Length: 461
Ligand code: PMP
Image (cartoon, rainbow, N blue to C red; front, top):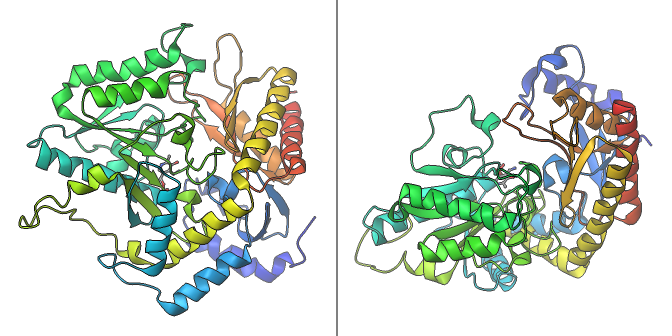
């Protein structure tokens, strides 16, 4: 179904985009002879582009962000009201929505206590890295400056976050990176580094301990992990992994920083991904689903024990967190986040996510039975991936162009899915990604998987 607005009404917009806008993550050469995609309007799970074409969005705004769906009037209302009351004051002071959202958020995060506001996932992670570094300086006399991150995880685009980036393609042309960031092995059992073994989860966690011992435990201050790796291929940690990780952090006095930028606020069926595993983090960072893209807001959340270390000596001018984020003082962010959380809670979106997530995973498993090219399906909640392999035995990835062709075929059918192309990396996977809004219905889920079924048949048939 096409949207009633006529494509030529906004042809000037498309032209302005073609001539002046540099899109994210995009090779622009094809736009010299074809129109760039310009999105115009959204409602619920649907989005319309500038040609008037309607799409069912299976990736919540492309990058697992619009958790509550498009076009929510109450979100617009709370943001408008807050802007007219007080749009901004620097974060050295508090704000009404900032205080109320922090209180509500902490209710959902037993054991956590303090919320530091900024604007993007990268920035939230940078704050946590800086806090870990400051603790290293003040508590450990400059030792414990290293921060571990995991192969295949992603933590953002700024240089600190990129230095903690485990995806080679994203980093390849931007070095040198910051010192003190050290990689640990991934925990993707489907591509086990140790062949087929029992207790893969514990083995993968032990691999972290090996890195700590190699580097020297007195040099390592933090470990930053995604609860479930997102862009690296939807890697659900294997049984036993998180328990061991927690023990290792405690054993070596290493602060655990969990990056919930994708998983946070309901995506996996719990408020936060780590809550599936009973983990007790020192830092939790979040961004995308916090206000579902209605406002730019991110949070670095810590325990009271961490916070205490930043006020231990009021007479020492260095004894506080010397950091600011100008737009962390925008009040529209926490106002939107508060309403976003009310919607998730009152509409029962966590249980819907669990239910619809099971349906999505089940549907993808049926596709695996039907299409030889689907080598593995993984996921939790409305956060799933299907890995495509040229051969189930060797697990060689399919050519990158084929993954793109599947996504393009779905797009043609009016369903937007994610396509991850990482075949250039050593043994890295090519996967189809699915992260529909948490309001998805059974018919949305079935429409998404039907489109993929058709696309796989045509591309690999
Ligand atoms: N962490 C994770 C796990 C992410 O997936 C992303 C973005 N995709 C980020 C951090 C960075 O967030 P942002 O783009 O808002 O800086």
